[in-house]
Length: 171
Image 1 (cartoon, rainbow, N blue to C red):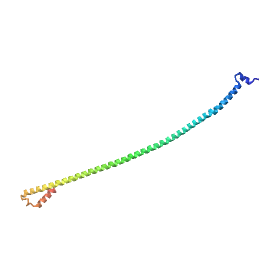
Image 2: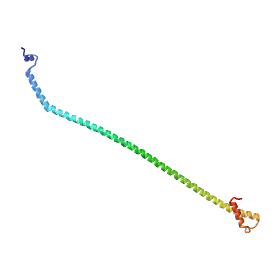
Image 3: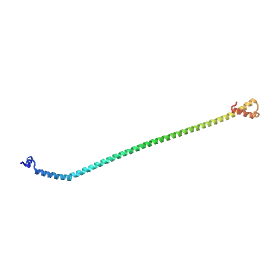
Image 4: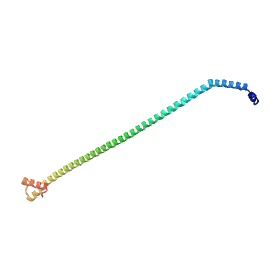
């Protein structure tokens, strides 16, 4: 019967070297596991935790950003409504002011027209009085020439009647 160790020896396999290699491998594995894999695993876990924390913070920031965006849109909408209301109120005030100015201008124009009419009536009255005085003198002269009497003899009543007729445009 063939010994398995001989066959393995012929192909270059030495069980003592393999056993030593296995022991070396297990020692290296233990050392690496104890001093390398645990710290590396710990670092990887810490980094994974930081990444997860960063993702959570990014999601929170995204949610807050959306909330801030909604709040900003609401503020802009409110500001827009406020500006529209201010513009409408300003337009109303401008219309009221324009109406007041127009009324004042119309009142001033009416006042000026009243003053002009008053001045015209006063001027007309003065002109009538002047014409009246001149008419009295003319009537005196006319009566004097017609009657050829002295002014003292002329009846005052006749002059008054004549002047009244001239004044009332009856002649």
